[in-house]
Length: 531
Figure 1: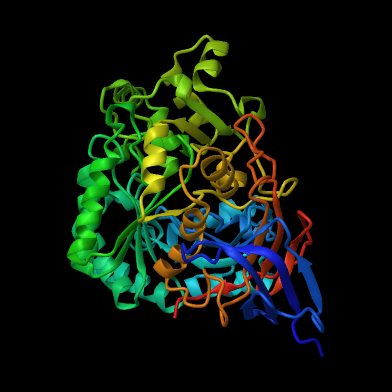
Figure 2 (figure 1 turned 180 degrees about the vertical axis):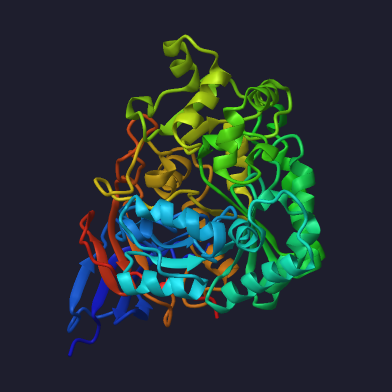
């Protein structure tokens, strides 16, 4: 019987704590790190991996992902794993496939039906069971979406819940936490999550706090009311007792570029007061969401079917167009030109993928804002889009902040798989490699050890993953070997479906899943459940 199943030698260990890197060997038995030191003996090891010239780090943690559906379609999650990601947090921005009742069940059956997958679960626990039983190629930690919880309790009604509905909201959150969720996410621009007032979110978050989870929030406003939205997030944490994670922190309009310096001061003050608040970020100046997010919130009441009816109704269409053209539109994309908005996924006409609204409108001889509504109507109000709305200086400023961790805000995909549709944001394939290549090596925005800590130890600590995130004896063997000189993003907005380079080996729960830069096809991931 070998002393170790795996032994990695001659690498530079960057252990995820932020401490300086140095030479070390790491030994693995079964799924656990059993020894760390410079003089480990290779005799008797099942496999020895020579890490000469490479950095050995903990597997990366994607703090903000949307792979709730794609993991059931393309479970190897290669767009993430080939970047060195070994754990991703799903269920963000208020969206999750549970509790699967009422309109949630209807919508999930429609989405999964496109891929031939039956929806057989109702609760978070049952959904996680399905993921585990089918097998996953990455570790998964799930949040329950407040939007899904609200839809299960009261549909798409744009009003406050009555006492019975509020009780149902709390019950669904508590049930999800008991089923293994790590917390609840809020979708501050997405109906019906954004129909909730602050008091409703505090009440729902009390169930999160009681279970020791996090409140992850896509805030209501990342533009002119950014500071107000940060203050609301802090208040929810303060009054509920939940730990707060502000999603993809940014100032998303030219009018407010630079405001992140003030928003982060608010967050620092909250932490000094004892309210645990952190942020995550993807390293790009472009965001991505559905084109329907440009519509004002009132137009979404009742769901996408009702939105389509409003887009097709002359008077309501005119009202929506007036909102889009105003200085302060109700939806996302404020103060952007049609040239700043890129179509990422149009199922009815793939020739539009990768083209801007301005280009599409010009080719049609049409008004750009009318074109947006026409595209939505022709696609059941479901089109992926990319918005070039942030400042590169802001991206760097947030990245340097000690409370920042890394999240891709993307679904996992597999090139050639069923889920790899359209031209998604390159963050899908490149987030972690981009930071290590561009921002660490090429520009020196972060030191390597600091970048790795933001991708590993600090993320795991926020989630309460006591057995992952750093390279220490007793921790689970989630490890990545990469070349600091060669690691880079190859995905672009024009050609997004390209895997990162320079990631040589990825070990997931003690099993090699990327070997010599190629994925082995092994499904070594686990569904993690919050205790």
